[in-house]
Length: 136
Image 1 (cartoon, rainbow, N blue to C red):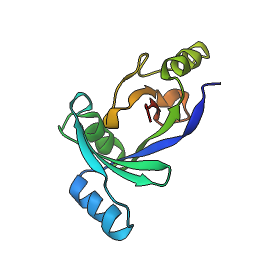
Image 2: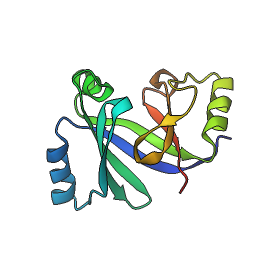
Image 3: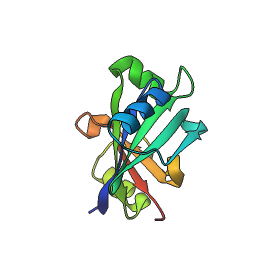
Image 4: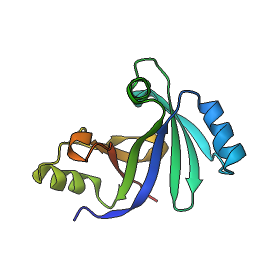
């Protein structure tokens, strides 16, 4: 088994990060613990802990970034769900061996210092799934 520990976070694509933060903090009572720009992914992220998991609000930093393309195609909303795993390389090898289509065959650096890899939605019943590994 690939060793899923928990839902790490849910990524929500938004057009306007400031307005989304206003909603999640002002109306839902969540608190942003930090923001970060991930240049490689052309995204600005805000982190909102929710118990043992997080909501990640994602705003594209460029008109051609993956989040901008997602919003253009699907509108704002849940873009991915991330599961924390014990050993990311092992999980990817196991899934690939079982015929799961991978977007990332090797881990890369994601927001919050996590090592991440995405599984293709065509192999996951239409949902973009991220696997992540963190030191903490």
